[in-house]
Length: 212
Image (tube, rainbow, N blue to C red; front, side, top):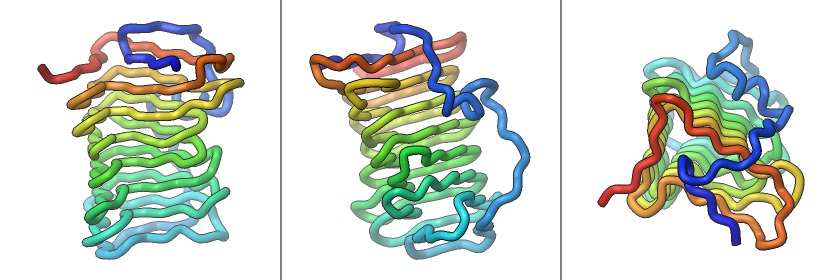
C-alpha cells in the first residue's frame, strides 16, 4: 500500500499531458457550452448525450432532496463548469461522473452529503480561488487524478480520497489553497507493486491540514 499525504511526501514532478489545460495556469479559458443550466433545479440533473460540456450559471442552485446533484453516465466524458451552487440530497454526491476524461472547473460552491465530487473512472479538477468543495470526502473516486486547487477542499473525513491505477500516471496534484480533512487531508491509495508516476506539489500559500 502506498499512501501519500499532501505536503509530506514529494514524488516525481511529471505532469499528465491530458491535464495540461486545467493544471498549467489555474485560469479558465472562455468557451461555449453544449448545455446551459440557468434555472434552479430541485431534482438530480442527469447528463445525456449529445454534447459533453455543461455550464451551471452564476447564482443558480442545484439542490435535490435526495441523491446526486449532477450525474453523468458511464463512459461519458463530461466537462462541467460551475459558477453557481451544486448540492447533493441525502446520501448523494454533488457531482458524480464516470468517464476517464471527465472534468470539473469549480468557480463557486460544490457540497455533497457523501462526496462533493466523485470521479468513478478518473477526474480532472480545477478548484478556483475562493471556490469551495465539501462533503464526507470532498473529492473521491478511482483512476487517474489531475487536480489543481487554489480554493478550499474540505471533507468531514478526507479532503481527497482516491484509488489510483497501478501503472501509467496516477495522481498529479498542485495545491495553492487549503485541503482539509477530519481524518486525513489527502489519501491516495495504490497497490504495493504499483509503478504509477505520482506528482504532489504544495506551492506557496498551500496547506494540508488535519484538525487536532
